[in-house]
Image (cartoon, rainbow, N blue to C red; front, side):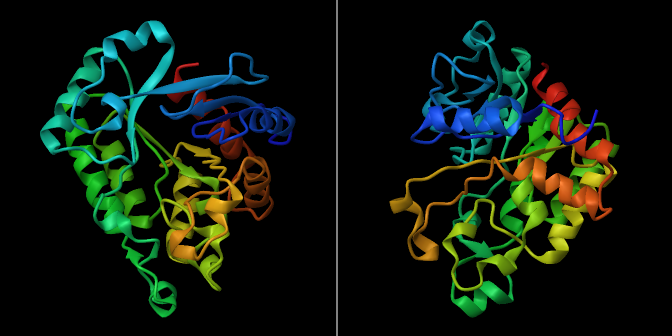
Length: 292
């Protein structure tokens, strides 16, 4: 089996305003499975298999727990709050307990709602450009809280789209301590860093934000080491009118389905990743995470 021919399993993909086009592109690029967030409504007929995450709170309001007992019959592969904020930590704790009782994995996207308001990494480039910054602590504070609650409840959890070196360190330590967790990184954060936002290029307005070159290297090393289990596309299509705006106003996210295989191939060619590790990151690991 080679990276060029493997059928990929994507842990995060949004279909956008033209689901049919997205699904046709995914089939052409060699995806076998796409995992959709709760707010996506997939078409009845799809050329690729679709895995669906359910909301862990009602309409992701962060306050009222969803009726997760119903999800088992509906084919939901896990539950998530996405980047939507929690009302408070007690609600989150109760939600994780409920999810564990229903044997539903929790997919967490760690981001502090206040610190996460910034649009660029808290570094020299963003400061020079006059952009509101998002420190790495926006992710790591939320991640540390999530890991503590996972330890408290024993729920199986998947940490999605980590973006910085400190998160790799926290995940490494949590795994060493035996927490039932896995994690992924978006291919964008393996290929790019904050240098891409020079010139206020709206195409690189992402969430989480692109971080420093040191963070980028730590993510690649974490993937090679196996601390990071999987790589996703984090494909996020937007209407042109929502994207082609001044950097701070542009909708976060990019169309990245085409980058997953080609990006990992580039890392293999550069000697930063073995082909087997790359294959595992888009096939074996996500299959295990989704229990396919």
